Amino acid sequence: MKIQPIHGSISMLISTAFLGIAFLLEGYWGVSVICAAIFLIYLIPAIRSTAGAITWFFFVNMGLAAAGTALDLSIEMLIVAAAAGLIGWDLTVYERGINQQTKMIRDEQVTIQHLKRLGTAIILGLTAVFVSRLIHLELTFALTILLSLLGIAGLSAAYLMVKAQQNPPD
Image (spheres, rainbow, N blue to C red):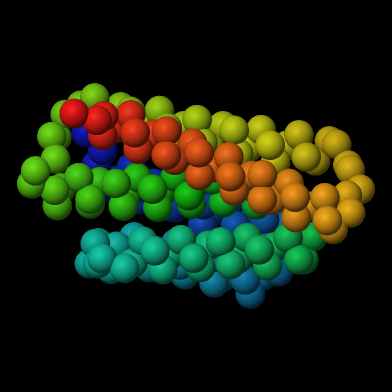
């Protein structure tokens, strides 16, 4: 299994389309036209293949999604747009990175493992978002900071565990 540039492009286009539709449904025609322009610009291969283009498109889409939350747009459409944008960015960066690596084993297992991790992260993230929409908790600022620090510690520990698995001691 090989990740092709088209995989990331399709995800970015889905992200932009969902953003455009979310703004259009609430009557923000101007922003929808901007999303359509971004969509069309992204279709130009010369622009899409430049090194920083995917990151630029990703940040623009995330900015539009953030603006959409401030305007009370459909949160479900914004979540799908954000997830598709993240998937598109990740697949494109991964595909470019793997093609630039000469020492890295271009093994199918490496790609499958990456896709499993990406899928797990997206599923857990979407589950957390939708569960948080169902459960409303009032937390103090101190408890929020504590939970944030615990989250950072958990992510750090997970990162170190994954790194240790990838580079076992001799």
